[in-house]
Image (tube, rainbow, N blue to C red; front, top):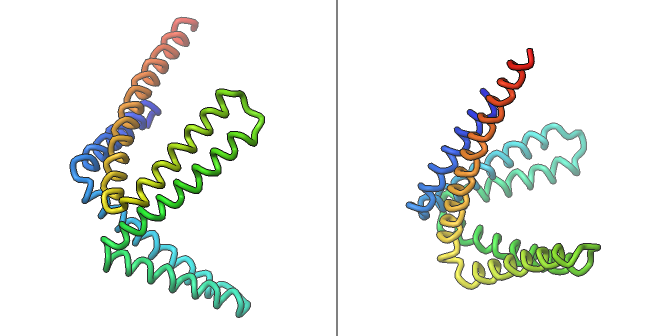
Amino acid sequence: MSLSSSLRWQGLLAIVIGIVSVAWPNITVGAFVVLFALFAFIAAFSDAARTFASDRAGPVVGWLLLALLSLAAGVVALVWPGLTALVLTIWIAVWSFVTGIVEVVMAFGQDETAGGRAMWALGGLISVALGIVLFIRPDIGAVSLATVFGLFSIVYGISALVLSTRAREARTAAQQLIGSSV
């Protein structure tokens, strides 16, 4: 498969996912919860496998505890999806807030140009604001995140389609150049 074909399919898939996320954000939140549960189950299986691969007692207990914790997280996610979506939203809020603070600090601690410092500071402040908003209203935050994810996916998909067209044009031009020089 050529680069242009790969980009075209990737772009189309991203647009479809984006449209679904914008049209049905609650379903998207539910899908994120299910994906989290699947990730937790895979982590539990992986940690359990490491439990039996260790030859010392200390790591065995640690890996077994991690496996049980991951298994419990997966079960909780499936049994209480609303609570899981709320906790994931709060986790994203905390992550966004802390990341934003770090970015603002980095803006003043690096050897950057004024424009670079401004971009770090602006990005950090936006991240802090997102964290605060999600923390204050996590109930609408999860649906809003799904909608923003959908819009991002649509824009990403359109970009991939444009790149696909440009890659196809570049390939055609290169083939014509090679063909005319022979």
